[in-house]
Image (cartoon, rainbow, N blue to C red; front, side, top):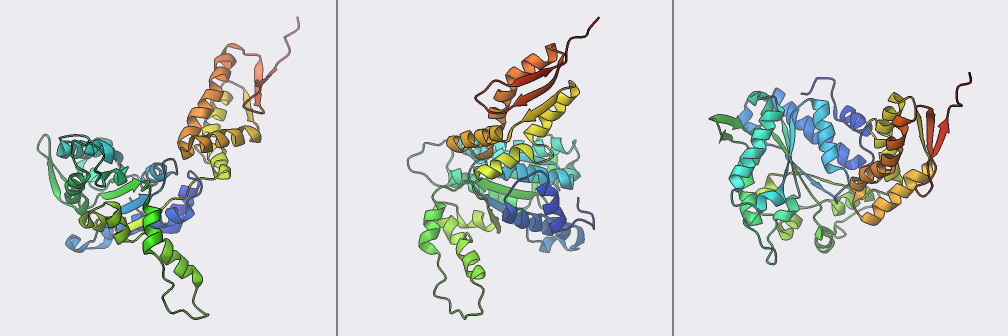
Length: 336
């Protein structure tokens, strides 16, 4: 879990190796996780621990799931994801929630005690707001109520007479919350606060950008559910420059992965900067953030990887643009 050497700043430094951008969200999440696991390790009376579950707000493809998954990997705790939309489309919401908890135990290798220190990420939580036009098997509000118990912390009886205490499980919820900015523009504004020349305008700006519980109430989340998510972090849309860096900079970037694949074939792979920019431009046009980057890159690599393994004389592949054929450098034929 957390060694004494792990601090919020070190968590952020680790995340920076794998996740591009979202600096403020990284800091907020790092502090929340640090606080959560430090409380578990140091507070003697576990009954007084107030859980600091987290709400991540940002469009699809901004890195919410990746950030949580990378964080759980650093901490060495089991991690699973769930989808709120799926929960709202079933008659058996409690069974679906139970399935999420069972998957957490499975990720912990069957170790219930380890699972009880894991992280559960529930995406598309904004889809649980009440909607008069959307036909659902289960209402969003009823799903929120169903999630309340496990998010607050309670022993849950699962199949096979397994008991899982969710008290120390960290719940992170995410969603795009389309339209929330309109609510905030109507309800925010601290211009009425008496200020002096020495006041830091950045503080007032930060207050205005902060998502308030009342904003979430008006959006459609019930007060009890919002109260279980005291920590809120907002994700920014990814710029073209950030999308380019996502493909090439992180340790596990798609470019680094393919570089290793080609190196294993004895081939050097060279991708021009313009190629990354073109892929980023397509992703922006698709409005999917980083989600579509891998698919576009895979499509670029497929015909190349089809050719290279059968042609051992190729020692370098160069791609200068998406709209030109790749250049293959070949060894001269052996002379006899």
